[in-house]
Image (cartoon, rainbow, N blue to C red; front, side, top):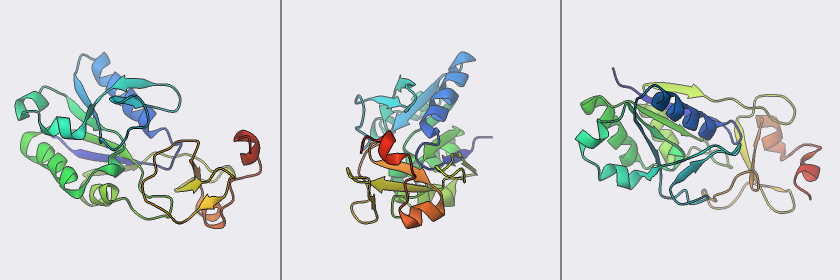
Length: 196
């Protein structure tokens, strides 16, 4: 039976690497799957999903997937969505429709919350609608579980105000435990690692 999965984690928890490994596992067994991301994600080559450890694969944009016929979508063993936090409520409901009405499994990977500790709209809807929810874990510099995404500026100060979506990776964000996110403490080695 098809299900909608939401696998979330803080920055640096290898969500994208997991998405790419899942795609590889399906295809290694001769099963085709569709790799998708929201058009908003323009950080790398236009139609690629790229992990921080260097794994990459071609993908299509979510709106392009919506233009495909149900028969074309059903040719896939599953649909894998990266950066799912950027989905709209309507897009999540479209995924629910594919799962419930057409039996297509969907696996979404994304952040749960933004740099202010607030849910992304797509993440909120996935937490409500997903059949299975799983945390992809990583650690803070102190060794505790990182559950928050800190955005920092060029001088290494943690930001708590600003637009919800500012695309970036290690150059702008770091996963922290709640305590260090609240205090804005990026760790004793942060300035060395980021040449500050």
